[in-house]
Image 1 (cartoon, rainbow over the protein chains, first blue to last red):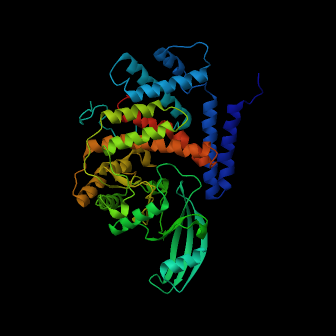
Image 2 (image 1 turned 90 degrees about the vertical axis):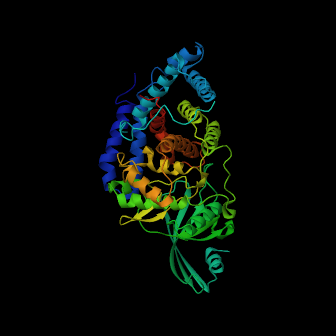
Image 3 (image 1 turned 45 degrees about the horizontal axis):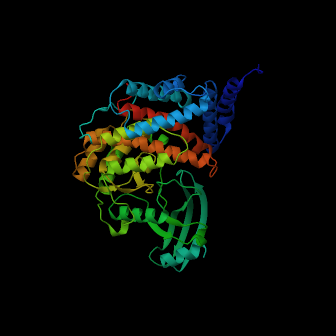
Amino acid sequence: MRSRPNAAELLDIAEQTLSGEVAPDMSNRQRYNVALIASAMGIARRELAGGVSAWDEELDTLRALYGADALEPPEAALSHLNRKLAADLRAGVYDAKSREQKAALNLLCQDVLARMDEDNPRYEKTAGSKQRSGVSRFVRRK
Amino acid sequence: MPLGPFIREAAGADSVKVEDGNLLTGGAIQENRALTVVIRGGDFDGTHEMVLRAEAAATIAESRPLDQQFALLKAAEAAGVTVPKPFWYCGDAAVAGKTFYLMQRITGEALGIRVTRQGEQPELATELGSELARIHAIHPPRNDLEFLDAVTESPALDAIAKYRGYLDELPEPHPVLEWTLRWLENNAPAAGEIVLCHRDFRTGNYMVHEGELTGVLDWEFAGWGDPHEDIAWFCARCWRFSGPQLEAGGIAARNVFYNAYEHGSGRTVDRDLVAYWETMAHVRWAVIALQQSMRHRSGEEPSLELALIGRRLAELEYECLRLTGAMK
């Protein structure tokens, strides 16, 4: 057991005090710094609420793709399996449509969405242009 | 030799008085200082508001040294691009503590968040389209720009190789960026016309005074490339600030900008190529953001601003996944 309010609650009220009460009395330059500090505290607060990954199923998905080593601690497994995934993506292992590609792309999407919820929850996900995507008229190399 | 005598010699003046001003903000990589320089005699007689641009403590790999930036500024000025007038470059660190160059201080607002808060500005977007056309009128080969790397395979494949190299220098793997770079490789267009690309031509890097453009800034990333790279960078979602629906830099509809560019350059904007380079734009900004955050993480330059740039990664990766069709 820890004392309350907990880390997230403290960061929350500290952030509110900073933005709501401290910032209004400051110069522009200092207000900019306060906005940065409040932003950093918000990200830290949201990150603290989660586990080792932004997306809970990240490690299970990586282990499903590459096999599990029960003795490896989660942080080390995440690091080395992500390195493997990155190298395989570069090498074209996931180029072709397959069950594995689907699982890997789902992992990338879920991970990004979960990190966005921590880093910038107000980002307008639907805004921006509707571009032609996925298929290109350019000649595929090889 | 202190600054005054350096300017006196460079300007062929009788006397020079330098009044030191403030450190200017803006420019996360370079250090900018405002100066008032009073010159008596010679071709530059008069009072000049100048900016002294010096190398910052730590830079990122993409950033060009100051003598090259100065040469680019000179080339742009000669091509009729609206830029702060470049005065002199000084390679002797003894003069001001670091190498530097002096340029005209232009007035106006550059901050992207403030520029886009003014809403739709079609005249400004038109001016910028014409400016970009003038930049793209500069073609290789150029003796004054011989330091710029020639395109080897194609602008796209060269960029992919470069960004993979940068990713390899970072401590963590980045699967989303690897996926996107692979997609860009598989869909790479053949090399087309090669022009001088500014490579940071976007809202936040030009100065506006009372609605009018007063200068295109920050030439430190310029190089030979595909003209669509600059068009895409200007329009990319990550550079629209308060105006995400105004797809040309958060200030106008794309067609306004495209039309001015087409009129000025005589080229037709290839919409598919813009879409391709817009995907590249998000990878590029993501890689630069990671490098910027490393300046903080390495302890070289502790800065909350640089630290937070690292947490912009997810939204850039989101755009990468969307543009490659992976995010439904």
